[in-house]
Image 1 (tube, rainbow, N blue to C red):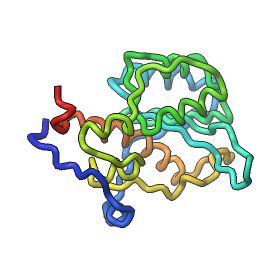
Image 2 (image 1 turned 180 degrees about the horizontal axis):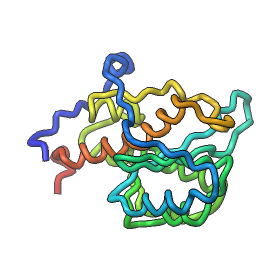
Image 3 (image 1 turned 180 degrees about the vertical axis):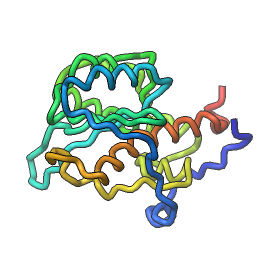
Length: 203
């Protein structure tokens, strides 16, 4: 564990933009056929923890929304991109989302889970929301980009956020963006756990 907590409480967009980018360097596997779901979920279920995120095709018309297109679940070495516009939210995936003994780390978890439940209802378990726990370390920022900036000293690119997540084929940049968003949550979480909380949250 680090001997002291030197995290700042807030960081500006300008300060964040000056930081080096952080990118997932592991293996990215795209799951767009039902036959590949079981193996992916088996691997993920054996991990000590996984990063979690979703992506939805943006709508540029008032009142028009789309269902979640992509579910990202990542270990430190491998990220799976489940293309939910092409495959069902199948039972092996639901078992992961409901597994209370598998920590799933994300940011704005409630919003992502709400989107997933529009496809199929399930009882989530084992989720950790970085937005909810960051104040224990004196951090007031909520966005993943700024949490990464404060905790890791590196920025998460948001360049692909409004791209088409229902495209026939995801570009390399989309894949890297999606994988990084899920994976970096585990990096932030692990760094927080190695750092003392601020006094009022210490047990």
